[in-house]
Image 1 (cartoon, rainbow, N blue to C red):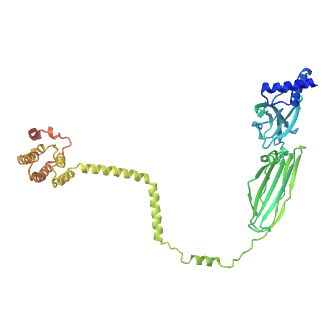
Image 2 (tube, helix red, strand yellow):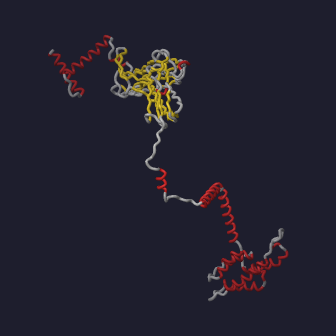
Length: 489
């Protein structure tokens, strides 16, 4: 043993130097050597060992359907989905969504149930999840293969598994079942509340019926009919539908509360009728029912309350000095104004078009007025009263009044006196400058005479008359005007 001990000590030191380990104790080395020997021995004897564990799937998924022998419409089935692994979960499994045509499916809401199993000598542990299935139509139905993924093992590797499909058949509900539903356990209770108690005319009595069913979806519980009662006005409320769980999110059943308020309309003795709620027992398959007793109520007349003070007098005292008297004329004017506003709003597009047309017409009238001879004549008179040497307004008026662009051509038809006056004015304006310009007054006085002559000569042209320059009757006058223009150039 001493020699063996020395050999093992030497191996431990060599391992420390070769692999850079901080140090290996004698007990650790012995355990390592024993593990290697055990694995070799298991390999020689054909026992399941490391190789078998490596071939084990990292995730096993199985689906089991728990259903009664006679599955009918409205029954509740449980599909248990087990997700197992030979190692451990580093992340919760990702469950698939389940959708079955013709059935109402509720996915698992809470934590899964811990389960353990041994398959082929390999221990598995995992979680069990429950899907609740409630068929709403008869026929053959199938739960498809469900694929689950999860992270398992020390490295958090992603593993997946697929369950096998499950099929089942749903039978139609019998006519005798009526509105019954299949339930494992059914509790039906009722409660009354009066306001006030004892009841008077105008008071209210509320009747509430509660159904608690195990293994039944809350929305599949039928409504309890709360009938009308003579002497009362019925006001039904919205039902309260609640899913019952086990405190950890696991599905247990459903609860439905139907309420109605009955308001007393008259005094007297009345009776609320009894109610019967029917369902089919899930264990025996037999029809069952719950009888809810009625209740006798007495409605008293509403007491007459005499106030300790006169409300009419107090209101009159409060309104004293605050009365408003509206004259009838104001009402008439208000009605007329309201009618005018209504008419204006109805005819507003027409008024807009009228305003646009009036603005366009005013613009055309202003343009015609600015292009008229009278407008240019007033502009020239204002210019003549100034000392400015410019004659822009004069020539614009001359072009409109005489139809000529220069003074000599314009006064040529007016005779020798007018031509001489025009020549004198042009000589004074464009000749040598004078100390006191006298041409402006002469031109202003002469233009007044010329305007009268031109306005007297203007006559409306015949409908089919020739232009003035093409009329033989004015040939000599046109030639004289052209000669005057030539001389002026």
